Length: 242
Image (cartoon, rainbow, N blue to C red; front, side, top):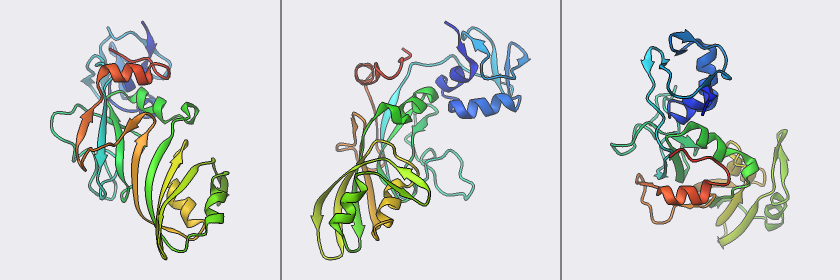
């Protein structure tokens, strides 16, 4: 079955679909010796497809891993500030993988990894309405009325943040532990929400992403999701390549 070249590249784990579109526009992709100029070009996988002159392997089955990201790593393949990256610290034996969303340098917890760039994009879509649950330690005076107001959604510096769910797990004079659930996950969203009511995030741990849980996974550990579970959990939102 034919599919767009950008989708094929993403499914092959070469890059995300957005990156694939850029590579195509830069003239870095050829199909049977022809330089491709549009991401809409159709392929079925039988062609000779090259990226910067290197042959791209046939797409593998869709795979997904749970990874417990420690603090101190950035979620990027190459960092312009030369900081330590998630992908340089993964256990040996994994194929090239792409993250589903990101966790910033000082955040930790569950990060989903996949060899399928199209799946990564699909799982990031807000339309899936997947909850991302975090354990958050904050410093500062906790005004419960202001905290509750964030649950209705809020605009901060021109950016609109969707409603979220917040519960107070424990509270002391100058710090508290919260559980926060989001369905959108914009850049540094929790830190910005807390800062808007005078709180500083001291620790941020992602506990779950949709149906996938951090559980007892230790920092730095990776665990592959069984194919059966993938089909059960993702069948309604994505066509699993087997």
